[in-house]
Length: 204
Ligand code: HEM
Image (cartoon, rainbow, N blue to C red; front, side, top):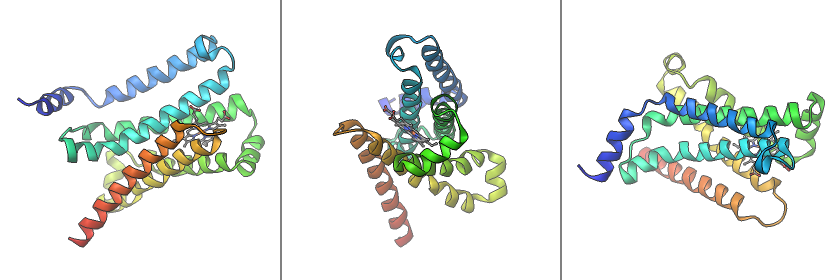
């Protein structure tokens, strides 16, 4: 069997719920490091935890966007993990938001104030709000209830949510930093690829 076939065979043996378990353990481990102020969590545990959750959320969103191109171009089939990747991305965004709201600014009025005052928070909040219907409808019952076509239409929210997440990161860093530019570049590239396919399918 070729390498791709072997990888796909291995992936078939891993249950999708592994993603949820690994995600929960990872989030818990980071929380523990912040609580006990270990390693690079020593200086400013709340801010480091907030940033770690935000970055993992963005990485998972990119991983979710990569599933289809990986299948199309490399033949690698991560399809069965896509929902778990998306839901875990939402879980990390929620954790990111809760650290911000409860441990960082620690008041609902400050959350509202920061959302209005700081454009990067406004953009982050918009992305978070777009992810809520995606998370709520990421189960078989909702796919059935909405119908496949409407469900697919709704799940196009993934693209603006990912772009706004990348923009949020680029906006909040001070000075020139390559990391947020790379994240946003990859996201925009993957979304453009997707749009291109959708358009060529519509024309064909
Ligand atoms: C719910 C609304 C959101 C709020 C209130 C929020 C707030 C914040 C804050 C306060 C920071 C740290 C800024 C600093 O230290 O100066 C941050 C960083 C970050 N956020 Fe958000 N955010 C939100 C949504 C999102 C979303 C939806 C994503 C991605 C999908 C995201 C990804 C990130 C990333 C990648 C960082 C920087 C991580 C790093 O420095 O390594 N955030 N956010």
